[in-house]
Image (cartoon, rainbow, N blue to C red; front, side, top):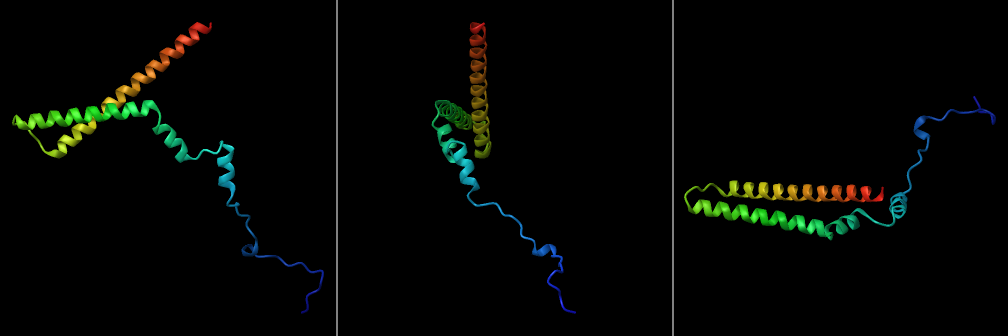
Length: 119
């Protein structure tokens, strides 16, 4: 049978073309945010004084815990190095958490004071 010029043929689903996203979409969304990437934001965060203070507080607490463990081990109440490191990490995390909580409390108090002053 010969095909006529006016006959229509159904296309199979495999022959349909799917629209793909252009590879430049990421750069457009980054420029919409003001040109800042995640790395730029992270570096800016690391440069903040609060993060530097938190790291200092954590390091101080960890060193104090390690020194306490070492002093205790000389006295005969010693344990392994693993327990010392675990204690140092716990002390650092606790000190950093307390410092963050204090900072948030200060921010809340300042906000309340500004709100009371404005009214």
